[in-house]
Amino acid sequence: MKRNLLQIAASLASGTVFGFGLALSGMLNPARVQGFLDIFGVWDPSLAFVLGGAVLVASVGVRIMYRMKRPVLDDSFHIPSSSKIDTPLIMGSALFGIGWGLGGFCPGPAIASLSVGLSESFVFVIAMLAGMTLHDRVRRSGS
Image (cartoon, rainbow, N blue to C red; front, top):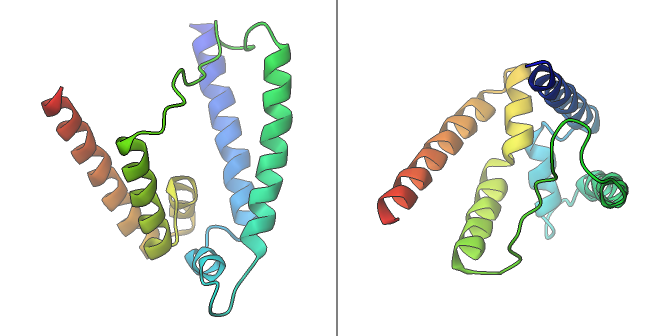
């Protein structure tokens, strides 16, 4: 029970730091993301710097992870076992990219932007949850 509470607290702290980072970098603003994707218009390169910083932090974390025997708050690391590029992966990536370009949000910033009350984020999160539910139902009925 105590370890479970620590896992929840660590997740909440990580999500809070992530959300503050998104807010601080301006990535809760869908116009900033759409400006990055508008390479033939008024291009805004700021997202490239945010993504570069995220890759740098993640690469340090991955290097540390591989040196550890197990995570601090779990029995094992949960690393994807498959590296296969298949149709569901390509379709999901395309759908993600289309949603990101049209809405200006990806899931993390959309949820974080709920805290500042952007009406676009509420619409996006509702559509995202509907899509996730539809995906699960279709996947379950096909299995």
